[in-house]
Image 1: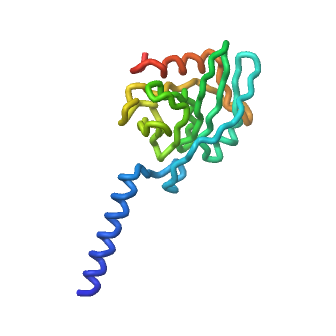
Image 2: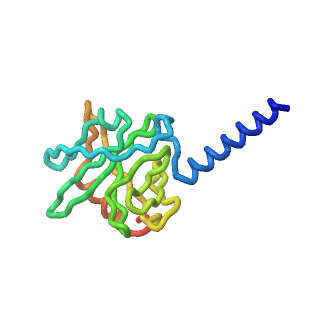
Image 3: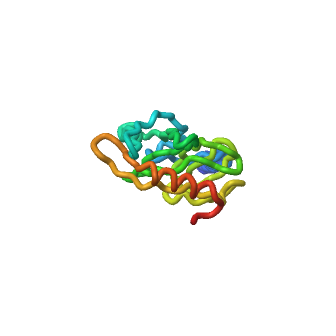
Length: 166
């Protein structure tokens, strides 16, 4: 009888812990540790029409954010790894004006309004700004750098500023 009561108590406690974690928005990061990955800012290297960031910083499990200036406009982007894939996206949440996102498992979370987006597609899941999917940027990996063209960055940023996806 004591063993059965103990098993019931442990099960109930486990259910409560899971409910608290889910209610608090906790989910597994890309490494399966259950920790939300907060943004790390890094400077982008600019060479002509090419912008690059260190691949090693993305490979280390970071949520990289970087800023690019183009003809007086400031644009922010994010890069992160999920499994074997690197993703590069515009990092803007137009309605709430956020430029910062965290990565919680397979979910991007706006650090201002809490809106959630699928990290693999950029599509909105829930929240006030979900109608503004995070557009992906085409990139190439050359040596130890993730490289994108300024044109592709600008296009992705402009596509993210408009509700829906063109």
